[in-house]
Amino acid sequence: MGKRWLNSMLSKEELDHGCGLSKSMNSLGRPIGNTRDFDIENQVFEIDNDSSFMSELEKEFSSYLNSSYLNSGSKSDNRYYDHYMYDTVYSLNNHINSCVDSYLRSEISIDRYILSGSDNPIYSYMYSYICSGESVSNGSDFNIRGRSNDLDANQKYRHLWVQCENCYGLNYKKFFRSKLYICEQCGYHLKMNSSDRIELLVDSGTWDPIDEHMISIDPIEFHSEEEPYRDRINLYQGKTGLTEAVQTGIGKLNGIPIAMGVMDFQFMGGSMGSVVGEKITRLIEYAANRSLPVIIVCASGGARMQEGSLSLMQMAKISSASYDYQFNKKLFYVSILTSPTTGGVTASFGMLGDIIIAEPNAHIAFAGKRVIEQTLNKTVPDGSQEAEYLFDKGLFDPIVPRNPLKGVLSELFQVHGFFALHPN
Figure: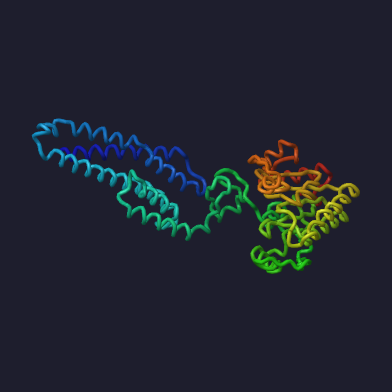
């Protein structure tokens, strides 16, 4: 009789708690994209941390033990009392743990149809977390097995996800490009390659690259202990499909003819060597001869050390071409600073635009934080090299997210007298 009462009470508590969880999950609305998985995980973890369910069971069980059913005789007269108490508590704990474990697994299984199967890394992660927790674990074998499955699943499926540098949330890689590499969790702008930026800003079918076959020839025959400079160039050419760290060309932006250069951080950190400097200089001269507005998207770690002083002189060469373009030809140059923009690029053409636009949360500096601290022996405050902080100091004009960037540029060009040749 007592056992049936206890099972009935436990089932009622479990059902009520389960309904409460279902309501809370339903109140969240329909999730967008891959955030559904994390909503499930968060709700499950709330059960693990909620002590009200367990405390209610303990209260009911205590009253049950103190009832007349168990205290019909004196404790001292019943030599089986201690043994009975131990067995009862032990059985109850096992029963509670088993029920909670089954409940959690059933709740996870509700949405498993949206996952890729029972070996999904998110499901494995949640299951291993739940089974390895102290409050619901039935033994160390679950913990070991869960962690092992978790590691295997992470290695197997890690190529499907992109982790945010800011909030460490996961973004589904298949849709990340269509989201413009903006984190769905916190809105952080992650790095974007040059080809995707061209696709974002230039009208489809209008991009015409120039000087795309120009490559470095290792002018100072730089050789490091790790690998020769030529080998590094070949390696990055194979990885990125580019010949150098910048793409230059002409195209149309909402029908407006433009000349544009886009640096690519994935190619040797977007470092500026003699070829990068030459391509940008030729782009500016080409635009000056045809009276085109210029856009340069900066993403660079600075001058390329493997080319020595030849890389440093590119700063002066590009600045000279820019001066002629802006002051003599009276044409319009827009500089877009993305993360990171540092070193020689910041000290030259990056800051010479008639309009200087920065992306949100972009890292913009001349020297890095570590270099400054080691050189000057002073602490650099966190965030002092981020776009939002520098905007407050007046370092550049607007901060423009990627989504409206093309429209903003189109309006700027029209204000400065550049219009579409064939408006729709």
